[in-house]
Length: 247
Image 1 (tube, rainbow, N blue to C red):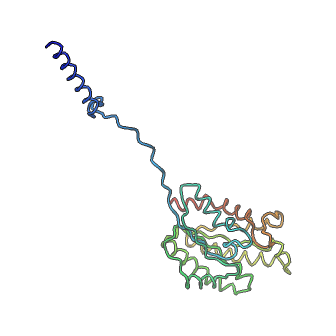
Image 2 (cartoon, rainbow, N blue to C red; image 1 turned 135 degrees about the vertical axis):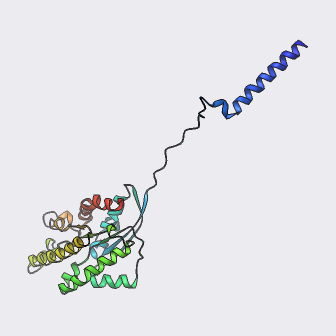
Image 3 (cartoon, rainbow, N blue to C red; image 1 turned 120 degrees about the vertical axis):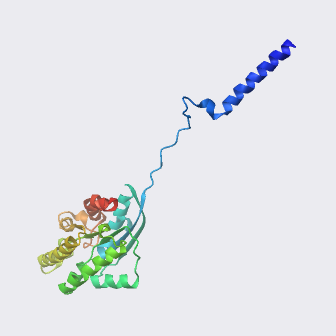
Protein backbone atom coordinates (compact mmCIF):
# COMPACT_ATOMS: atom_id res chain seq x y z
CA UNK A 1 0.00 0.00 0.00
CA UNK A 2 2.91 2.32 0.85
CA UNK A 3 4.53 1.76 -2.55
CA UNK A 4 1.24 2.47 -4.30
CA UNK A 5 0.85 5.72 -2.31
CA UNK A 6 4.36 6.84 -3.27
CA UNK A 7 3.79 6.05 -6.93
CA UNK A 8 0.47 7.91 -6.90
CA UNK A 9 2.05 10.95 -5.26
CA UNK A 10 4.87 11.01 -7.84
CA UNK A 11 2.32 10.70 -10.66
CA UNK A 12 0.32 13.68 -9.34
CA UNK A 13 3.51 15.81 -9.06
CA UNK A 14 4.52 14.95 -12.64
CA UNK A 15 1.08 15.94 -13.92
CA UNK A 16 1.25 19.27 -12.10
CA UNK A 17 4.68 20.06 -13.57
CA UNK A 18 3.55 19.13 -17.08
CA UNK A 19 0.43 21.27 -16.80
CA UNK A 20 2.54 24.22 -15.63
CA UNK A 21 4.67 23.99 -18.74
CA UNK A 22 1.52 24.15 -20.87
CA UNK A 23 0.01 27.25 -19.19
CA UNK A 24 1.12 30.77 -20.22
CA UNK A 25 0.85 32.00 -16.63
CA UNK A 26 3.74 29.75 -15.64
CA UNK A 27 6.08 31.72 -17.94
CA UNK A 28 5.08 35.08 -16.53
CA UNK A 29 7.36 37.08 -14.32
CA UNK A 30 5.84 39.87 -12.23
CA UNK A 31 2.73 39.69 -14.37
CA UNK A 32 4.56 40.36 -17.70
CA UNK A 33 4.32 37.68 -20.33
CA UNK A 34 7.51 36.97 -22.26
CA UNK A 35 6.48 36.84 -25.94
CA UNK A 36 8.51 35.74 -28.92
CA UNK A 37 10.58 38.59 -30.44
CA UNK A 38 9.00 40.36 -33.47
CA UNK A 39 11.03 40.99 -36.60
CA UNK A 40 11.80 44.58 -37.54
CA UNK A 41 8.99 46.03 -39.69
CA UNK A 42 9.63 45.96 -43.43
CA UNK A 43 10.02 49.47 -44.90
CA UNK A 44 7.35 50.00 -47.52
CA UNK A 45 8.51 52.47 -50.18
CA UNK A 46 6.23 55.13 -51.62
CA UNK A 47 5.24 54.07 -55.12
CA UNK A 48 5.59 56.80 -57.72
CA UNK A 49 4.07 57.40 -61.16
CA UNK A 50 6.29 59.73 -63.18
CA UNK A 51 5.31 61.51 -66.40
CA UNK A 52 8.02 63.16 -68.54
CA UNK A 53 6.91 65.60 -71.24
CA UNK A 54 9.14 66.99 -73.97
CA UNK A 55 10.99 66.41 -77.22
CA UNK A 56 14.26 64.74 -78.29
CA UNK A 57 15.97 65.72 -75.04
CA UNK A 58 13.35 63.80 -73.06
CA UNK A 59 13.02 60.74 -75.29
CA UNK A 60 16.82 60.54 -75.44
CA UNK A 61 17.58 60.76 -79.14
CA UNK A 62 20.72 58.74 -80.03
CA UNK A 63 21.14 57.10 -76.59
CA UNK A 64 19.92 53.80 -75.16
CA UNK A 65 16.57 53.89 -73.32
CA UNK A 66 18.31 53.34 -69.97
CA UNK A 67 20.39 56.50 -70.56
CA UNK A 68 17.46 58.87 -71.03
CA UNK A 69 17.35 61.45 -68.27
CA UNK A 70 13.84 60.43 -67.07
CA UNK A 71 14.95 56.80 -66.82
CA UNK A 72 18.15 57.73 -64.98
CA UNK A 73 16.15 59.92 -62.61
CA UNK A 74 13.67 57.13 -61.95
CA UNK A 75 16.49 54.67 -61.29
CA UNK A 76 18.10 57.13 -58.86
CA UNK A 77 14.85 57.63 -56.98
CA UNK A 78 14.44 53.86 -56.71
CA UNK A 79 17.52 53.73 -54.50
CA UNK A 80 15.95 56.09 -51.96
CA UNK A 81 12.64 55.66 -50.15
CA UNK A 82 10.65 55.58 -53.36
CA UNK A 83 9.79 53.08 -56.04
CA UNK A 84 8.94 54.43 -59.49
CA UNK A 85 6.47 51.78 -60.60
CA UNK A 86 5.43 53.65 -63.75
CA UNK A 87 7.49 55.92 -66.00
CA UNK A 88 5.58 57.34 -68.95
CA UNK A 89 7.43 59.46 -71.51
CA UNK A 90 5.46 61.58 -73.97
CA UNK A 91 8.10 63.05 -76.23
CA UNK A 92 9.35 62.76 -79.80
CA UNK A 93 12.28 64.25 -81.66
CA UNK A 94 11.25 67.43 -83.46
CA UNK A 95 8.22 68.25 -81.32
CA UNK A 96 7.41 71.91 -80.75
CA UNK A 97 5.13 73.22 -78.03
CA UNK A 98 2.28 73.05 -80.54
CA UNK A 99 2.90 69.39 -81.32
CA UNK A 100 3.15 68.42 -77.65
CA UNK A 101 -0.15 70.14 -76.89
CA UNK A 102 -1.76 68.30 -79.78
CA UNK A 103 -0.50 64.96 -78.45
CA UNK A 104 -1.83 65.67 -74.97
CA UNK A 105 -5.19 66.61 -76.47
CA UNK A 106 -5.35 63.47 -78.61
CA UNK A 107 -3.94 61.00 -76.07
CA UNK A 108 -4.33 62.40 -72.58
CA UNK A 109 -2.16 60.42 -70.14
CA UNK A 110 -4.40 60.85 -67.09
CA UNK A 111 -4.25 63.07 -64.03
CA UNK A 112 -2.90 60.71 -61.38
CA UNK A 113 0.88 61.16 -61.65
CA UNK A 114 2.98 61.82 -58.56
CA UNK A 115 5.70 63.63 -60.51
CA UNK A 116 5.68 65.48 -63.86
CA UNK A 117 8.60 67.06 -65.72
CA UNK A 118 8.58 69.40 -68.72
CA UNK A 119 11.37 70.25 -71.16
CA UNK A 120 10.22 71.85 -74.41
CA UNK A 121 11.02 74.70 -76.78
CA UNK A 122 14.22 73.97 -78.69
CA UNK A 123 12.30 73.06 -81.85
CA UNK A 124 10.30 76.27 -81.67
CA UNK A 125 13.63 78.07 -82.01
CA UNK A 126 15.14 75.58 -84.46
CA UNK A 127 12.12 75.72 -86.76
CA UNK A 128 11.99 79.54 -86.56
CA UNK A 129 8.52 79.62 -85.01
CA UNK A 130 7.47 83.03 -83.66
CA UNK A 131 8.64 83.58 -80.10
CA UNK A 132 5.13 84.81 -79.32
CA UNK A 133 3.93 81.23 -79.92
CA UNK A 134 6.17 79.99 -77.12
CA UNK A 135 4.95 82.79 -74.88
CA UNK A 136 1.41 81.57 -75.46
CA UNK A 137 1.93 77.81 -75.40
CA UNK A 138 4.55 77.26 -72.70
CA UNK A 139 2.23 78.49 -69.90
CA UNK A 140 -0.48 76.28 -71.41
CA UNK A 141 1.80 73.25 -71.19
CA UNK A 142 2.83 74.12 -67.65
CA UNK A 143 -0.82 74.16 -66.62
CA UNK A 144 -1.32 70.84 -68.39
CA UNK A 145 1.61 69.39 -66.46
CA UNK A 146 0.03 70.53 -63.20
CA UNK A 147 -3.29 68.94 -64.15
CA UNK A 148 -1.55 65.61 -64.84
CA UNK A 149 0.09 65.83 -61.40
CA UNK A 150 -3.28 65.56 -59.65
CA UNK A 151 -3.53 69.34 -59.80
CA UNK A 152 -0.59 69.65 -57.39
CA UNK A 153 1.95 72.20 -58.70
CA UNK A 154 4.43 71.13 -56.01
CA UNK A 155 4.97 67.86 -57.93
CA UNK A 156 5.98 69.55 -61.21
CA UNK A 157 9.41 70.71 -62.36
CA UNK A 158 10.84 72.22 -65.55
CA UNK A 159 14.26 71.84 -67.15
CA UNK A 160 15.85 74.61 -69.20
CA UNK A 161 16.50 74.12 -72.91
CA UNK A 162 20.03 72.87 -73.68
CA UNK A 163 22.19 74.98 -75.98
CA UNK A 164 22.92 73.03 -79.13
CA UNK A 165 25.28 75.78 -80.33
CA UNK A 166 27.87 73.99 -78.20
CA UNK A 167 27.71 70.84 -80.32
CA UNK A 168 29.51 69.81 -83.49
CA UNK A 169 26.24 70.31 -85.37
CA UNK A 170 25.64 73.74 -83.87
CA UNK A 171 29.12 74.90 -84.76
CA UNK A 172 28.18 74.42 -88.40
CA UNK A 173 25.59 77.19 -88.16
CA UNK A 174 26.33 80.55 -89.78
CA UNK A 175 26.42 82.21 -86.36
CA UNK A 176 26.24 79.87 -83.32
CA UNK A 177 26.01 82.85 -80.98
CA UNK A 178 22.58 83.70 -82.39
CA UNK A 179 21.39 80.23 -81.33
CA UNK A 180 22.65 80.81 -77.79
CA UNK A 181 21.08 84.26 -77.57
CA UNK A 182 17.71 82.98 -78.78
CA UNK A 183 17.71 80.05 -76.36
CA UNK A 184 18.61 82.41 -73.52
CA UNK A 185 15.46 84.34 -74.40
CA UNK A 186 13.36 81.18 -74.33
CA UNK A 187 14.83 80.05 -71.03
CA UNK A 188 14.45 83.46 -69.40
CA UNK A 189 10.76 83.46 -70.27
CA UNK A 190 10.20 79.89 -69.05
CA UNK A 191 12.02 80.64 -65.81
CA UNK A 192 9.90 83.75 -65.18
CA UNK A 193 6.68 81.77 -65.69
CA UNK A 194 7.88 79.01 -63.35
CA UNK A 195 8.86 81.52 -60.67
CA UNK A 196 5.43 83.16 -60.89
CA UNK A 197 3.82 79.73 -60.47
CA UNK A 198 6.26 78.66 -57.71
CA UNK A 199 7.49 75.71 -59.78
CA UNK A 200 11.16 74.59 -59.74
CA UNK A 201 13.12 75.55 -62.86
CA UNK A 202 16.42 73.72 -63.18
CA UNK A 203 19.18 75.25 -65.29
CA UNK A 204 20.90 72.44 -67.17
CA UNK A 205 21.90 74.75 -70.03
CA UNK A 206 25.26 75.50 -68.43
CA UNK A 207 26.12 71.79 -68.51
CA UNK A 208 25.21 71.61 -72.21
CA UNK A 209 27.60 74.48 -72.88
CA UNK A 210 30.51 72.25 -71.92
CA UNK A 211 29.86 70.06 -74.96
CA UNK A 212 32.71 71.35 -77.09
CA UNK A 213 35.28 71.10 -74.30
CA UNK A 214 34.07 67.67 -73.17
CA UNK A 215 33.27 65.48 -76.19
CA UNK A 216 32.00 62.68 -73.92
CA UNK A 217 28.94 64.83 -73.18
CA UNK A 218 27.68 64.48 -76.76
CA UNK A 219 25.95 61.51 -78.36
CA UNK A 220 27.32 59.89 -81.49
CA UNK A 221 25.16 62.14 -83.71
CA UNK A 222 27.16 65.18 -82.60
CA UNK A 223 23.99 67.05 -81.64
CA UNK A 224 22.17 65.47 -78.71
CA UNK A 225 23.36 64.80 -75.15
CA UNK A 226 25.06 61.54 -74.30
CA UNK A 227 24.07 59.36 -71.37
CA UNK A 228 26.94 60.99 -69.48
CA UNK A 229 25.43 64.46 -69.89
CA UNK A 230 22.01 63.17 -68.88
CA UNK A 231 23.60 61.67 -65.76
CA UNK A 232 24.98 65.10 -64.87
CA UNK A 233 21.52 66.61 -65.28
CA UNK A 234 20.14 64.02 -62.89
CA UNK A 235 22.92 64.62 -60.38
CA UNK A 236 22.07 68.34 -60.47
CA UNK A 237 18.33 67.97 -59.88
CA UNK A 238 18.10 64.74 -57.85
CA UNK A 239 18.06 66.12 -54.30
CA UNK A 240 15.54 68.83 -55.14
CA UNK A 241 13.25 66.40 -56.95
CA UNK A 242 13.40 64.03 -54.00
CA UNK A 243 12.28 66.88 -51.74
CA UNK A 244 9.29 67.48 -54.02
CA UNK A 245 8.21 63.90 -53.43
CA UNK A 246 8.81 64.11 -49.69
CA UNK A 247 6.60 67.16 -49.22
